[in-house]
Image (cartoon, rainbow, N blue to C red; front, side, top):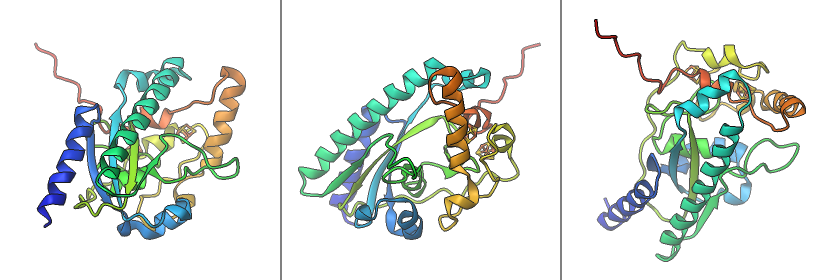
Length: 240
Ligand code: SF4
Ligand code: SF4
């Protein structure tokens, strides 16, 4: 193990946690080359490592979505994205002053009207960095917060010691699939080599959110986030 790189990794991850991230880790992107080829901009395939971090959403904000579209959720969605972009830029600077190349992936950016992917899939980097597993809903599922998180990713040439993906899956649960009003979730367990199209129909989710915009004024849903039982605390027994 290169002790200097290990120490640098710890410095980066500690800086993220101190600045507001809920967890952070390093992804070895070579472990999911096929998925990255399928879902990322080819110009970014040269990066072999990513720093991945999560920002948790307050659970109450997500639970509101069970009642319908929520302006409060949209407000914090934007606020969290701003925080992610801020942390990504700071992280890039820490890496670049050491001479490494970086690409901070924008927190939320569509790459075109006919392509629902972002420029780089945050969730693949987060999965490889051990932040959680990719659920049937297509979201990253963390043990502590379930899917109630947003993700940040900074691609880098720094050969940082990587973390390991978690060996966890959704199992028999299919609550997100049952709750999805667009029937966009196929209920297929994720593997890095399974194309997104076999697990999800993102165009149906997209069309549904366009319909929400017609009546609510903004695109929003999140019922699959609210439905997920992971990260919801068990009810405490009442004192007799
Ligand atoms: S956001 Fe809504 S429409 Fe899209 S997959 Fe989740 S539950 Fe389905
Ligand atoms: S609701 Fe169940 S199936 Fe869907 S992502 Fe959460 S754990 Fe997985």
